[in-house]
Amino acid sequence: MNIEKSPSVKWKFLILPLIAVTLISVLPQLNLWIKRGVQWNGAYATLHGDEFLYSAYLNALIDNRPRRNDPFMGTDLANRPLPETTFSIQLVPAVALSSVARLLRLSSSKTFVALTVISGWLAAISLFWLLLSMTRNSLLAGTGVLFVLCLGTIAAKQGLLGLLLDRDLLIFGLPFLRRYQPAASFFLFFVFVTLVWRALTTESNRFAWLQRALAGLALVLLIFSYLYLWTAALAWLVCLAVLSILIGSPTTRVRSIRVFITIGVMAATALVLYGYLVSHRSHTLDSAQTLINTHQPDLFRIPEIVGLVVVVGLLLAWRKGKVELGSPTVLFCAAFALLPLVVFNQQIITGRSMQPYHFEGFIANYAALVGVFILVTIIWTPIPKRALVWIAGLCFLWGLIEVDLPIRAYSAADIVKDEAVPALRRLNELGKQSGVLRQTIVFSPRSEIMLTLPTWAPQGTLLAIGSLDFGSISQAERRELFYSYLYFSNVDAKGLHELFDGKTDDSFLKYYVRSAIFGHERALPSLSQNFRPIEPNEIQQAINEFEDYTRAFSLEEAKRTRYTYLITRADSEGDLSRIDHWYERGPVEQVGKYKLYVVNLRSESGR
Image (cartoon, helix red, strand yellow):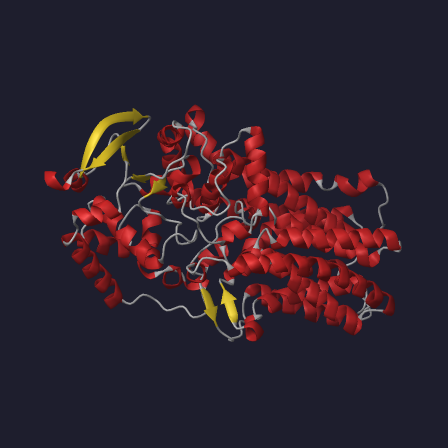
């Protein structure tokens, strides 16, 4: 196919993929807007179950709270120093987003709404730039954008495919859109790869040096953005370096060495600071992130299988004389194909593995698909325009199908969260009336309130859902807080048993009951290669433990989990007898569909 030289011609085929990705990205939010209409209070539509952690942290930074904070407990507001966590170390996207939000006076939630669109644009543009640079054909590049971004969930064996295979699902929709990780920095991976390509293929030494420096900067930004993106970028670079030395042409080897030295020096400098921050991480972080010690290989994930097929395809194309084995296109394609094998098996050497499904869902799947697409452009030349249109159309259709899953999964809960926003905004006002944020705790028997409150207000929550991840409590403390939450929600041993059996309309508590009591690694098989399911006798032991906790609940325990505000649904407050036993409810303020109480712990003499 002819090489296109006009910039306007080169980029014109980006427009339709950009429109398609934008539409797919905003469908869940459009669904929420349509259902809420003029009553929409500003809540974002959930795309992934973990997003509430990131929106809470972002809200804390918008409030000018320190980098190391816990928005779910508010312990930083009590001048209690906190250790480093993944949130405080991976600071680039959070600081960038919070700075823009303060400048434009946006809430954390509305920043997420905007990020959905912007991250889709950035992903499409960066991927188009890479594919255009490699294929020199804008129609191919535009088709590749939809192929890679829309089929990423299939390559991760999540979404609809995971549902059909009856596996534990961690990802609905399109994984690269999860906010703000990896959405805010996802595009940087492809920017990095494109800059390396330009550095290796340009004839100008001055231009090549600039591309090398920019590629190094992109990797530095990735290091402080998202663990799974920068380690994947580094793995890809190592694959490219080895391939360039082994099979690259003499010119490619020389240029490669210059690229690897420049990027390596910049990355090594950044990793010194990164290592310092990691050395000061929370002692609970390894547990929260399911870091395990293992040298066991992990060889049969879909991205690895796809990558192997690409490598075999390249070798067959070479034998048939369709490609030069040491050409930059083949080297880059092979590096993409080998990346999954490296990231899923680095533990053979390092002895450490941490939630490898993040590689599977957020980058290795996309890298493998880029490899597939480049291989197809090599062995199928020229590709008929009609075929490209059909491929693009089918990929877009699949993207629409995938994005329907988070709408179905989270839409009802998102409506409940949006209805609660006026009450949460009122809490935000109360928290800032004195001009100084203070640590206070809020309780609500509705888990949706506990999930979304830190996204809107500075107060902590009794449930402390994310505090293990933010390094302020241990797993044992997390379990005790969950017992306290169940106690004040008037749940008994039978109710806890029903939670374990999934007999509840609360989709969050179906999962959280296992995670809070036994830990993430016992609740989700995908988090670890050494998954150990929760046994029935362990569940019964937990129920017995909760019964003992309920019977022994005392004033001292009530003081330990003291809260200041109570939020209930105005039309269905439920049984508040245990709350009234230990607390006095003050004057009630109804805000929207919720009642907001200031509560005071009854004195010991009053018992």
